[in-house]
Each structure stands twice: as C-alpha cells, then as structure tokens.
Length: 323
Ligand code: COA
Image (cartoon, rainbow, N blue to C red):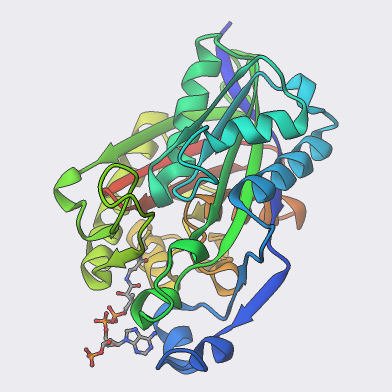
C-alpha cells in the first residue's frame, strides 16, 4: 500500500476591515478604474491592531479543524507559510500550535513569499508520505499591509491580508483514483531576487523594511514560469489540462490568471477567482481561494484540482490534488 496525503478540509480567516479602491484613491494618486482594469481588484481586507499573522492563522486553522471534526490534539505537523511573521522568531507556526492545543509535534514556518503555500504543501506532503507525521495543518497567513509603502501607488493597491488552512492526512491506498496529492513541482531562481523584495531585515538594516517591486517584469516572468510548471506537474501525474476540474491559482492579478488559463486552454469558468475581493494575500491566497470554492460547493469529492503560485525569489510551483 502507498501512503498518500489526503486533503480532508479547509478553513480561512479574513480581517474585519474591508478597504475599497475609492478609499485608497483618497490616499494616493490612483483610481478605482485604474486598479480594476489593470488588476481586477475591487476590495481587500486590512488587519487592524490586534489582528496579526498568528491570530489570522489560528482562526483559519480552527475553521479547518472544525470542518473535519478534529481538534488541535489530532495534529502532529504544522507548516505555516508566511513572509510577514509576528516575530523574527519563534516561528509563527509555534504560536498557532500553542493556540490550538497541538503539543509535541512538528511546527515550523516556510518562507517562499507568494509561493509559500505551494512550497508548504510540497514539504508537508513529503513528510506525511515518509511517515514523519500523520495529520498536518498547512497554513498560509499574511499581513502584507504591515510591509507596504502606503505612499507607493504601484504596490499599495495590490495587496491584502488574510489566512487559509488545509488539513492533510496520511492514508494508505493503491487505487488509481484515490484522493490525495498526486504531484508537486517547486522551483526557485535567485537571479531575480531584486525584482520583488523587502528593503530591510534583521541581519541588514535591523528594520523590517517595505515591499519593493518591478511589477511589469514580475508579470512577464509569472506567466511563463506558471505555464511551464503546470505542464511539468500534469506530465508527472499523467494528465492533461483538459482533465483539471478546477484551477486554484495564486491570486496576484486577474490578468495573470487570464493569461495562465489561456496558455492551458482552460475555460475561465474552471478558474477560481477571489482576487477581486481579497487582492493579493501572498501565501494566503491559494488556501483562501480553495476554502471559498470548497465551501460554496464548486469543488467536490473526486475533483482534480491544480494549485499554483509564483512569488518573490523568484519562487514558483504547482501541485495537483485529487479531492
Ligand atoms: N494608479 C494609477 N496609476 C498607476 C498605479 C496606480 N495604482 N500604479 C502604477 N501606475 C502608473 C505608473 O506610474 C505608470 O505611469 P507612467 O506610464 O506615467 O510611468 C503606469 O501606471 C504604468 O505602470 P506599469 O507598472 O508599467 O503598469 P502595468 O500595466 O505593468 O501594471 C501592475 C502594473 C503592477 C498592475 C502590473 O505590472 C502587475 O500586475 N504586475 C505583476 C505584479 C504582481 O502580481 N506581483 C506579485 C506577484 S506574487
């Protein structure tokens, strides 16, 4: 029998405060029309004081556990993807571990920015399949509002805060159509690490810094890298793009989503889109979108779901999951 990582449930959490494009236009020289046309974003959730990456992650984790009827005591692995941890250390995953009452297992953070959740899925899947853990919470949680330069209109309109979580469980099966993670590919190319970065850090300026981005160049790389990694994962799993029931992409920009779906020849109806409501929530965007589509009944047991993301580093990756 082969061990597989089965996705048994999802959860999410968003800050209470919703900020519209019109509100941003009062602070920087932009407009609702420009933001909607170039990005598809209409609103984003922004964390208030007291809402942090750890509190959002904890809420999303509890929400996911509730969905599958488990408690923190059932979890022996927490992999949390974030670029905006509560503290430089300890890992935010350990704060969540304590909050949900999951003692003694494994808990650590993964830093791959917007690709963080897909990286975390890849890492957790490897650990579950080698028997290091039995039941994992994989979480993407971010408060990018805290690292935005609110005077830079080219970046501050693009991001939002939030968290999403999934429960993965190691189960044995040899059936070809059994649920589980079927294939994952992860990549990085550090040659581009100055196209999207934060201009600070514990070991350099001693300050956290602000997000900086060359948007146009990021856009170009994103579409090419995503199309190629999606092809790799489909090849590994022995499927074609036609077999995918749902594409759940990183929600950076509606135009990147459209371009990626076009490259795969996928109809827009099969792409889960939340960027209009959530903006780019970095590592949280894929699990947030997954949770939306699981809860509204679009994604059903047996469906073939492709998740993908690309982010600073550059890092990128994709994973094909049978629900
Ligand atoms: N409102 C109004 N004008 C804006 C603006 C805003 N919020 N942000 C930028 N502009 C202006 C620029 O200053 C520029 O003006 P100029 O021509 O007078 O210099 C003009 O719009 C075009 O800027 P440019 O950056 O070339 O626009 P674009 O068509 O590439 O769109 C992005 C900008 C950021 C929306 C686009 O590049 C993008 O989506 N990139 C990918 C970013 C991303 O997803 N990153 C995260 C990956 S994880």
